[in-house]
Length: 489
Image 1 (spheres, helix red, strand yellow):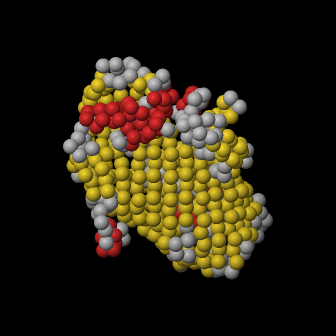
Image 2: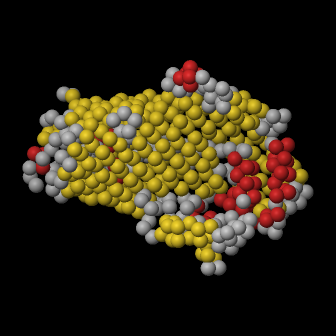
Image 3: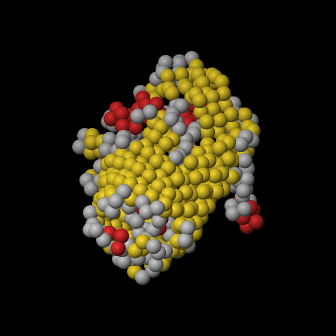
């Protein structure tokens, strides 16, 4: 466990950067009777003259995605299983899988208010959503240290390391309008209210080891906007603590905190080519947040030299007496300058392209592409689905997602309605059905083997959204009855 301690203590002391990339489940896209589909494509409108989400439980979303927990994370060894911190673990398949960095992302949202209604000139929507995103990227060279330590005359590049987090409020005003009889367009105008953020901007993060000295070449900044007290020690090393707060302060730093403004916009279109084929597309989250309140910025640039230490695979198991020396050397060598600089964060634009084939008035087949853009990177997914729409009772989607350099697995969307009340759930990346009963054969402290039942063979992503809505006039639009629109089938 000391191996993990040294890695995470050293490098989380010196943070990093990334763009947030939260996204709704793909399983939600073709649940056309669920109002929350409008969050993905503003041109889509629910099969209801009006809707109102039950406050607080109309749209609860959680998501975890990572490339660290593939089938090569737990490996068979000597009749048992080992993990990446144990003897016998083969690092090469794991390193090949993660590429330049291993990523771990988590997203949570909750919407206190979601509502919409049909008017003579189009469909209007409004939502208030609280969003929390956290992302971490651990460079490949970090895991090489766990494997082999710090051999003499080695070079490490930690620049791919990244960590980002932001909590913000989104007020979205939506409008959808149908041109002639085939084309519907929509827009969301979003006002963003930033509450807490941490971001870093790293240009260089290289470590070179030698018997006589180690050299750290670092050029980067850590940005933070948060209502915390920051103390700086004599070496410029920061530590944060929560201040004493009363209800007035909580309100000022929460609901009434307008010091971190932002804007964003979504555009969408739906084209009904004929009564069998419908094509759609949207681009979402074109926007940013400017952070200006409760700022703390830490800057480090230049080369920092300190006494060398010979730490390799032969003495990693007895590293306890070396860890403190490494940390003390880093604290003495790396000088951080403290200031208060404003910064901005992006939302990570997303492009959706879809095609839907209506087999008849209740069954359709869908295809969907999603591209998520981030700094120097993008994520590509393809989804195919079979969708059943029994409008008075049931709407469901069974689908399969193929992710480039990611997991390929099933998803499910389901909405049940009784009277005006609708309950729905949408899930992507349901863990694979093949599981292992894993017994970790050894532990670092020589204790009893660890038993972990029902471990999925691979876990990359899991997204889930669920909620409860009230639908009014849920048989169709005022000028477009639902079943009548399929009179040729």
